[in-house]
Length: 360
Ligand code: PMP
Image (cartoon, rainbow, N blue to C red; front, top):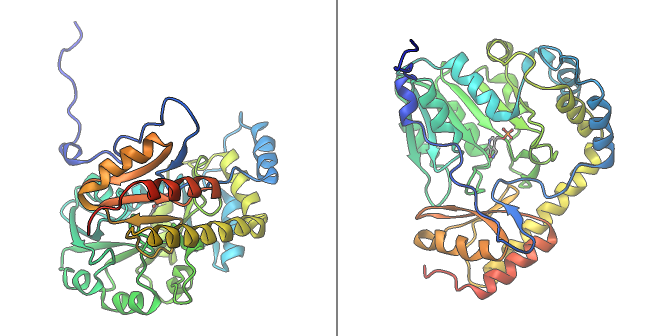
């Protein structure tokens, strides 16, 4: 007879939170705007759609184990040897590779909090111990992070600029911090929003990796390149780390359609970056408007804004949701609002005008 017992999943899984809590619900009627996942509001360019359609005729064939053509194109684009690159199904895919390649049970993984929600998941999944250092006024406290490094620290995850607050530490602060991290500790510099980072002091993790063997820089095609639906991320590190991560990649983990779209996106980057420019201009316009209405909004180097609305966060989010503005509420702390189309941002500003900003 069939057994009535079931296999037990690894015990660490019990402590792992859901990646994203419940997505906001669109109103029953009328248009709505997805402002909760930091997506690009623009649909793919015609040239990218054509590449996708071309690749769609080949989907009976496997892709190569690693996306070799994309790796070559990235190597040329970034001026790094192909052996310094790793790809994955989104940068979250590369985080899983990091867990498998670089973390042992009991290792400490250090990161700021709040930051990208994958960090505690990756650490716990590997059986590692998450060590969270609180942000100060929404910004990384790099002194406190350096002080929290112990002989058990195996990796530091550093989101620059930070999700969900949009804030950045800048090149000088980052380099001072990197100088304080022991060479045997991996630093993952998460540059998912690199292309939106306009400060002249923005660090460039690809440049920094050349003389830092413990640095892994992550970037993605999901945000500035507008390909979140296809799942392509990449990492840049010196060969020892890059090779270890490639070993842990899901074989054929970047599909043919995704590879073709990413290649074309690189090719038409100038056109895509004009859109990035418009998103950055909209970010500044939206922030200025919200500030003028009495809302607190942190400066942002990303494609989203952080409103530290504290206890009011969930009620404001529900109110805006009814108006078709689907934003991300962080309980008791704030709202993260993606910079959308000009139309969506206008609706947001109108909603912010009619909702009283929470008392400070
Ligand atoms: N890093 C950060 C900081 C992010 O905010 C995100 C997406 N929200 C990612 C990585 C993952 O992006 P993807 O897997 O789409 O490349």
